Each structure stands twice: as structure tokens, then as C-alpha cells.
Length: 163
Image (cartoon, helix red, strand yellow):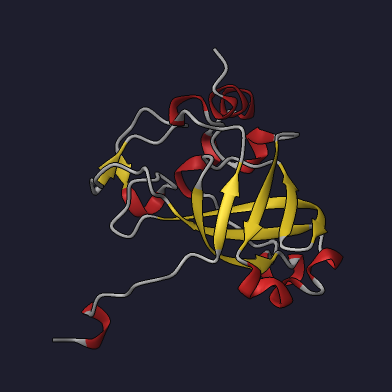
């Protein structure tokens, strides 16, 4: 068997706590969760790894989408009415249900990170935390594929899950 096909397992390093309990009412993407606060409870065994993180304004959270449904290779994304290839979307139901959000880091208290603009369900297992570093993560020559034609007002309404 090819090495890349071997199963991989991860151990959560903590849990994400938010006011979001219903997937159908949870904002889609951090941009549409502005002002919503949560906290990241990191296992005390990893506390030393949080040192120096408070110098960053934003962190990238990688997490297990523990409530995701079975995946399909074609999905209708929240900003479109056309079926799209799964990997051209951020749909939560994926072959490996790994989620990612860039949230604002408000403060750290020991093993707890207080964050804002959080779009994650309460109780989500946290896999990793990385600092968001603008000069590494965005280079300005960005293309947005099929999303380039999406009206921002419509995106805001759908992303906030407001009628």
C-alpha cells in the first residue's frame, strides 16, 4: 500500500467553546461572525506552547468537524446555487473533516485563549493553533475562482444566516 494512503490519527489539544449550538444558525466564516466571542480551552499539557502567542492579533484554528455529515464530491455552497466541486468550497462535510478558521485573539489567560469573530460549533475538538502572519499567508495576487462574481451584500446576509 502507498504510504500516503495509510490512516492518520490525531489527538485533540483542546476544545473550542462558543455560543453556537445549532449548525443551521451558526455564521458561515469568521467574517460573518464579527463580534461573536468564544474561548479556546487548551489541555494544560500544552500550556507552554501558548507562550508568545499573545503578540499576534489573529490565530488560525484547525479543528475536527465532529458534527459533519458524510461528504459528497459535488456540493451547493452557501454563496451559490450551482453545484460545485467539494474542494473548490469550504463545505464542512469532507473526506477528512478538518476545519479552519482565522479568529481574532483577544487575550490569553493560562490555558485559555479568548477569541472573537468565531464561527465554530461549541464543543469542537481543537487539533492545532497557528499564528496568522499576513506576510506569509497572503501575497496580494489572489484569485477567488467562482466566488469572484458573488455580491458582497448577499454574502453578508447568507453568511450571517439572517433572512
